[in-house]
Image 1 (cartoon, rainbow, N blue to C red):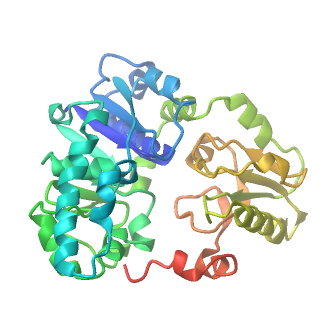
Image 2 (image 1 turned 90 degrees about the vertical axis):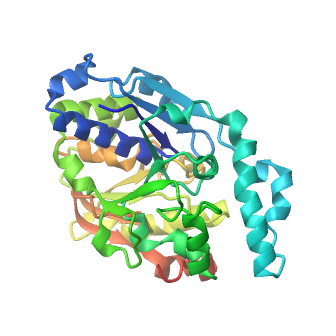
Length: 372
């Protein structure tokens, strides 16, 4: 088995990294029992946790004990705004030629500035997997001419918002031609040093490129044995006993789950829209439901002070996918704004409110992503 590293920015990224590692182990015909026990068959994969947009500190010691990973690194990834000298290179000069010249300079200089913050020698790995390669690490790998595999940021992300197209909609053909030659960086399989772009469902993406390939998440989760599920719960959930106690409900009421998301920069608007969702969807045909509110890991609102007293707040420090792994858990309804619920098989009714809902709370242009 090759030496691999996964560069993760969210808990979901770590979750998919684990699924991919377990998939490799299953394909290699290793016993799941040995995988869970951490036998000598494991240990080729490394995990890199970026501190740029997510707090992994609580999970870090558990990740270091997880038998799926030989080494775990923290990555003090820096946005381009951290380096003042890059700001002029992002300004719109009004000239496409000057803008493209500055973009070429940006894509050359940014990796040089990132170099001191990279905690590993990427060239020592056979396979590098990067989730969301528009983040600085993507610029670094392309700028340093290091081949890597890109992986879809979230479940069916490119189905609903193809950022590579949206971010480069002016002169798209010219920009992708330049990216293919290594002059500039474009995410999701357009840059020269991106070997391939792994997505969940290729058939649903309107505009694809030749580097996109499909690996369905459902195929990976279908392979999970009970020992695999325990391994994942041990990694992601700090107190599984507390979580099981919160989810226990001895009444015959329906369960309704509302998923928080880091929507709107204005936290007061975010509070209001989530409270409005709870109020609008907390009743089912059986009457008042038991309502659970799963806070998103990157939603920084303190909901302990504002949720109704009878709403159960689930911890933000684990991804919602952990709920799939708890035997017997079922919801009558799950409600979200943008979170893709295709894989949420433990609910009878799946409600994705989408843009029509968000139009009531913020300027539609802030979340309209155009043709993908």
